[in-house]
Length: 104
Image (tube, rainbow, N blue to C red; front, top):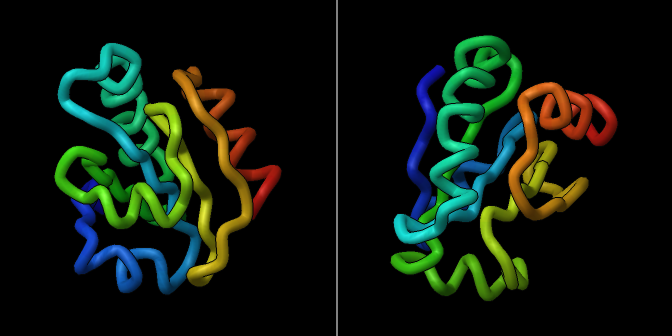
């Protein structure tokens, strides 16, 4: 499954079904650029089980405010639309897999 770019308008639908990892990011954010290839790898490996949605905080301030995103990258894990866990900062792939498995 390909990584989806969510917006304020599509966010609720994007997270409504299954396990969804949401990456709140911005183009100017260094750690966000570091985690992007990790998310690509993760999508290639477990994309059939976990949907990955990226939300640009500069263009989707409503959703970022709703989930109180104070630092980026922020990663939120949803299961069937319900927020299960939240973390911030760069994480290596193995730590991201543990984060998902521990909280889904």
